[in-house]
Amino acid sequence: SAPGARAGTFELLVKSQDGTAGEICAADVGASLEVSPAMGKGFVLDGVHEKSHALLFATGSGISPIKALLESGALAGREVALYYGTQDEAHTAFLEQSNAWGCTVVRVYSEDNGRHVQDALRDDLSAIDASNSFAVLCGQKEMTTDVIDILTTAGV
Image 1 (cartoon, one colour):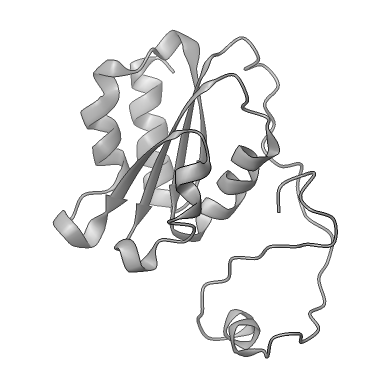
Image 2 (cartoon, one colour):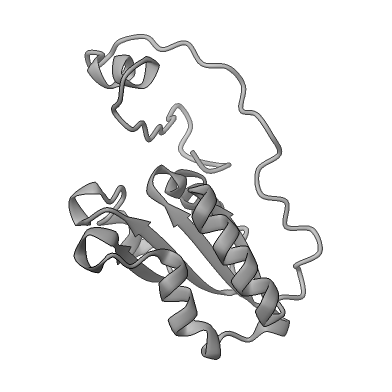
């Protein structure tokens, strides 16, 4: 959940798979869930206050912290582009909600044509103002490594 979210609410995005995640997904509505305090400090945006373009990158369940960042208001007043990669539309969390996030959303479905977030970035790279942009990434290691390489080479 984003800082300042509705009191008494807590949102989780859990991918159903074996182990604890599967147990959470199989729990009945209203079941108790024990949680620990959030780890980390979130996305540290120190040093980017003068940048007016935010480039956000997420794959799969990596959209959860990006969603919280968007809803927190920390990017208010900036031009924001979100590159969001999933397998297909059916596997895209927050599909309808994302239309209200106040940013450009570039959806990349790997099942459609084998393309990934980093491919969409390469297509758009010439339109990015490298000197006035910063990036926030959350997702698969291959995507984050490739995106960092692409943006670093471009001067972001």
